[in-house]
Length: 139
Ligand code: NI
Image (tube, rainbow, N blue to C red):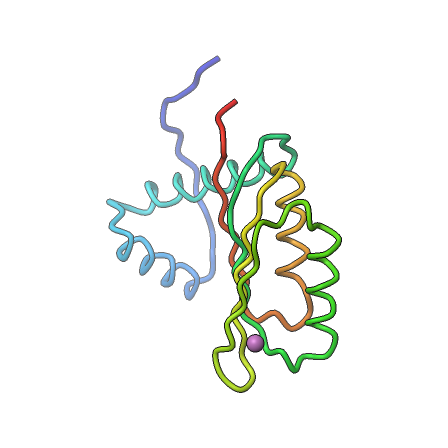
């Protein structure tokens, strides 16, 4: 059954979180909170469905880290070698004495790529990780 009628529900959250959310709503130009929540839920559901998916996707994993962090570079290299079939390219930028930015271009089954991204961004010492992906072909 297609139920596209709007349903109302209430959400509770901390004041400071709501304040930040309202800033986001404003900055992204949403008409109201509801519109922003619908977009966030759609994004989350899309991301979630891809986690189990056989669909071929391509994307990037962006990592910021301090290369002095013990074991981090070894771990990063190990994961990339293990998943070499899914990695098209890796570019490393030395930002300053300690900070590095690494951009890893990935391609493969959505579920494998999602797992690879999770492994990379959760390495101890990674300060910031951002994963983006898009389907290569529509099913
Ligand atoms: Ni570096």
